Image (cartoon, rainbow, N blue to C red; front, side, top):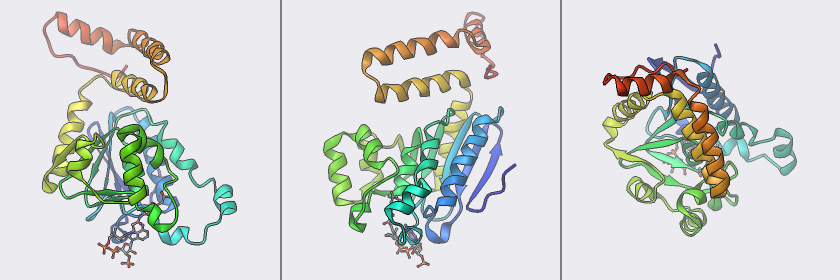
Length: 258
Ligand code: CAA
């Protein structure tokens, strides 16, 4: 078991919750913290009883972005030698569903972290923004890429150039998030959704995530060939037999994730 300094983790049933735990700095992300978050995700990705990973933040904000204090002394050579964003690449390899529950400020690197989640539920009042241009830099952890793939070039340029604050309602309208809920219901609604997903056959969710991610990058024909292989693969699972037998026998399926 790992011991973490900047996050807290809990597991309840099939749901693992990772909480960013630097509330006095609005969960601004230092390098160790990013490494801890992705390490915890990899750990839960391997734990059989965990089916869904929830990512959230302690205190009033999900995350106010990269730790600016840590970055002030950086230069291109130190960033190259640190391989600054290597840990961020690891998020892409997490196979289980990740649900982000966000509130308060979701800025810069915090917004990029939120965009690493598969489903996003936001408390009303949440403000999203990429303020990097105002600091003389730009997003470096996938912000320009993931946002553009989500909302298209026109809105992405507007939001990235101006750094304007985007309300939860606007984020919902543009397909950046899945749902807006009352702040006091954020965790309850997130866990309800997580528990609903946890009842689905885990291998189906896993290969759907894999295929949908390919849809973002692949041309249609190649994506469809890829999808097909995953479809065939699921016929090797016990859960496919269980799901179809349960339907024929008119009973509830009991999925084992195998
Ligand atoms: N890095 C380091 N510390 C931060 C921080 C950050 N990104 N954001 C907030 N903090 C710290 C503040 O310095 C403050 O610490 P002290 O109490 O020790 O002074 C504490 O968190 C609370 O913040 P504020 O007092 O400023 O709270 P506020 O409610 O008045 O303002 C805020 C909140 C509007 C989010 C403001 O803190 C702010 O503008 N933060 C910076 C946001 C930002 O520019 N983020 C992008 C970072 S760059 C990035 O993410 C680049 C990348 O992709 C690699």
